Image (cartoon, rainbow, N blue to C red; front, side, top):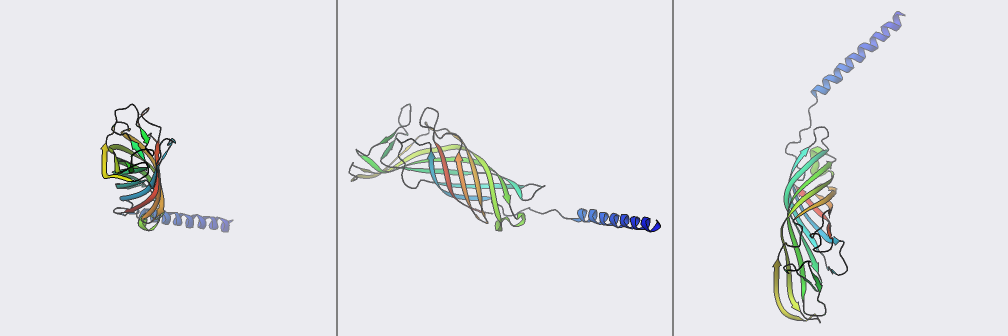
Length: 242
């Protein structure tokens, strides 16, 4: 009986010592210092862009694209350093190309006209450009918090944008046989038909400084009743740093 009691007491004593040592080590453990780490404080994006919901009467053509640049602050979670919130601001611009189409961006009409002019004089190239000031917010994951510039990363988020400008750029007048009539460039600028704010959903996944991203505009490009319900989307490359 004494041997059993002595064995039990020994186990209890060893367990107590191990528990104290473990508690001591926990107190001594230093938190991960993420101050000044590189984690996508600067984003440069280039993408293919198109419109969802485009009717047959609107004839886009070629490689339409977008260019975006953002400066971001990164706030890591104290409870999980693999996660952080990215908040920032920047400029986003979309460039949509059209074929033999007149866009009545400055017309005084109830709706925005996209007129096919293939059977008459037309511009060889027409581009519709929209530029936004945007504030993106991202929930970020990085596999190696201390070296996020050398690890797998992913994020999802939204960005709120305010329309800064909208204009068309028309180059070189041609006849219906696609022969040059006059070489000149005509620009027209107006925001009357456009929603001046937009909400866009975003997602990114990649490694180190490079990632693939996608975005989809959740609000219509044009005002209700002024044109078709069109929702721009983009798929492209992000280069990040700092």
